[in-house]
Image (cartoon, rainbow, N blue to C red):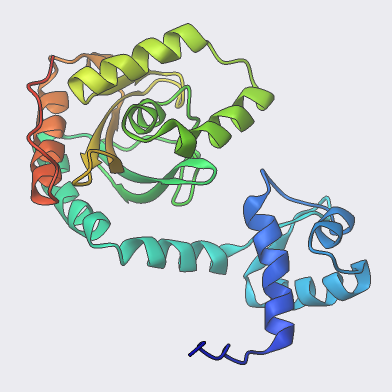
Length: 255
């Protein structure tokens, strides 16, 4: 017997179409473009957007384009945190920061690329425009290299292609970083994402060997971008332990 379709509220279904269009876009959209992609007339779309703006689900930029607002970010982060693996990894970060002295960030892969879902501040403060919900560059971040190394190309290809449309990517250098990450479960950058700061990243793996999240240490010590650095080794040790806890197969000895 075919299961009956649940009845819903048509106006909410219509409003969701606008949010789905925004989710698939690379950035803010003008009303005309947004309404056309959602198959709505601009006046109807504007009424929905006005309600979304009032509740904080959507924001309107000074140039009048629309993008997700703070409520959308809070909902997304709450959904991510309900994933046990992310919660467990997040709870392990204070000890890592205490051991290494560096700030740690936890990232997951979204349709736009590596997305920061938690910061654990270290004892040495520094200024950065990165925040919860920030999307890191795929090709210029240690976090991005790790995700590309440990996720299927079909998952990462769209975000990488979108980045290539915005900026020139050193394909050879990025390929070397990805290959190194596969062998060592570590990736490094020195000042390419945050000026004056180095970073090292390692994956937390699912049972199937794919990256569920990455943990990245950031600090002003340029020596951090070395595989032999004690903080890098502590980071990989933690991520390997978490990976095994979540069912990752026996991890190969890092090259």
